[in-house]
Image 1 (cartoon, each protein chain N blue to C red):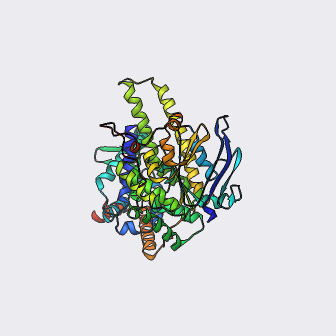
Image 2 (spheres, rainbow over the protein chains, first blue to last red):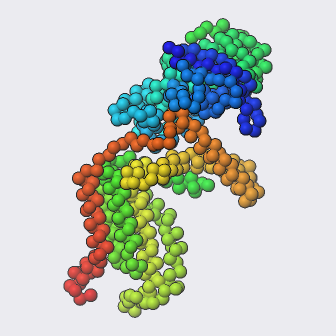
Length: 257
Length: 270
């Protein structure tokens, strides 16, 4: 199924003020992969994500999502294919109730009546938020908001799920719950995060951005074992791979859970 | 800032009442919006000295509050907040208008006092009716009703966004104000100048948020068209509610019921 592929070739982006945010980024993500994009603040992660559904126009280079190159003509189809969940759920939930919000995408796709009802019901059930459907967004907790924000995107049945900092601002329980949820999605997944332990658990592949360039791209475990690389990119090993905080002994080798 | 946050919190509580499930709550929002409009028109269109004719209108808020199971104290408290503004509008009337219109034994009441009282009563009635409308309908449903009644969609969408982000904005404003307060050490900070930059910060942040929201909308296929979801039915019950109350208001408007009652009680000697 070629339509789950994300291919970025020599992508450059210069902001109007002259800041070079991306300087020739290339990668190819294939069907069903779960990929983390990590890097220091200002490394270009958010700029990269904003390109993936065509919100920012490329200064140079090209992007292909599935069978389509990203152009003005293919934009509507690409925005349906790439479901994007933003960091601050308050930006994503703008309708009066949870139901209205989840229905917003399907209604824009031209669905009506029962179809919309079905989509909303299904999406909310998948994130375990069916009981929240009639609540206004400002009455939800942080974890609930995040789950509903994911539902708003799932309701459009995207093939590719892109999430900016999925676990930021969540309490440990809500974070764990969300990670369990994400693990069960079989979409192609692209996450940006500073939560490297989450990356270790959810993503088999990691792309490290540094000053607008791809510094490394490979299996997550290999990348986290390369201490020189991590230090050069203002990163460090996930806590699960660091030593015991009490005795200082290294943990036994991490096996993929 | 604290008082603004408080006011928004009050609004939130009012909106919570809208989740109720009574006869009044179940009525179509359009019927309630139209009845409220008719009520306000009838009350406002009475002459400025017709104080007595206003009192029968209290029947409407009383009935709706009883049927809608609304807490009278809470609503009354919110009306009290608005009354000082009405008082300001009419406070000079007694000075300018000293013609005596009514005599109660030795006491002469001037037109100014009458019109001041009528302004206050009218403010109580109209503000009360608006608050009751929100409490038995809910803000989003009111917007939806206005949309169905033909208000241009751009306005209803504006209202909905205003409502959604009012809470986010006040929280953000509250946080900024707290940050200032904590470092002002009880002084006024740099006075008005800090408030200037504080407000501009808030404006810029609002702007950025608006851009992010637009982005979120685009990401979900928004093309400039809003699709209303609910298809509500305007039934017989709603029609009766609308026609009944409109009739009552028309009657109150045309016949001075207070006077009529007085005439009946005193046997026509008044």
